[in-house]
Image (cartoon, rainbow, N blue to C red):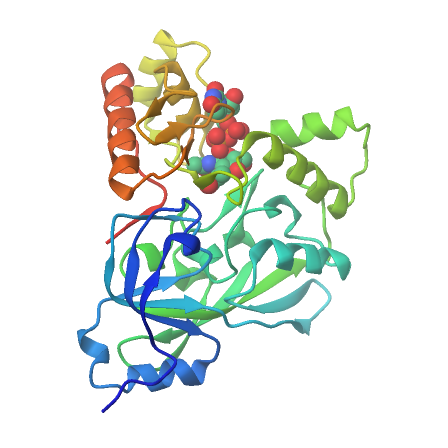
Length: 343
Ligand code: EPU
């Protein structure tokens, strides 16, 4: 049987990942509707294909050609689906651009997502890695999500608990990796809104702007300003945001490190562990602004690796390996990658 004509062959993935890394998809589908996905799942070939679900491509490191089927999620739509005295529930298609959704909710007068303004990527990818910034993780605003089980073809609903969110983590990065394709996400936006200004950079920027009682749109503007200063725009310089997770250590290890490095930035967690700033550790190892071949460490934020032109996946992994080695030697800490390495 011939394959459906919406399946394309040998498609370049370089424009579809924000690091701009080279690689081609053997088979490629721009997924606009659930019906297309059902057609694919019913194909006899389906079970044999290795699959990659792609959102905005802002959190992956492509190490070469992808021999199977790449599914680029493009399902759109956004709407208020329920409302009570406490919350508004807003549902958005997985293919919607994340920042556009944030802006749209603010335009409707629905605060709640403003701290997450300007994060690259799509709505469907946001819960996968539990995006977070400036004191808020998306997990706190997720009511639930809709997905298709790629093995059985069934529609499945996840609530916040079954997403099993963690720091830049969820069930979709762990036990269920590759199993589900998220089609839409429902957010709960609080009606009794209070600005989240606890994060030092946000507080400082509000003070500079002499804003004492910020609106949600003020916060979004402040966050956009801070991000634009510190983080490279992927449209200008290829990158995948924070390349490493901020490491979490136990109290004893922290006491040991703090004795040697009194200026170590640290964030005590509710379970007694302490989160450290990977960017600081990397800068201390002398990597900030340095290059290894075509990949560099961004000069304004050491946690971000950038494509200086013509980088391949292996170049990125070479530099990240060298950085991990330095941090291990200098601090005895294992840095974990934040983006997903494909394949
Ligand atoms: N720092 C340095 N040198 C650097 C970078 C940071 O000394 O080159 C220090 C800063 O001075 C500060 C501390 O490290 O004391 C933390 O830095 P910052 O506030 O800029 O945040 P971050 O830990 O580098 C995290 C998230 C970002 C998020 C920001 C703001 C992770 C891995 N990264 O970065 O998320 O935008 O906080 O909330 O959790 C992402 O995940 O892709 C991402 C960009």
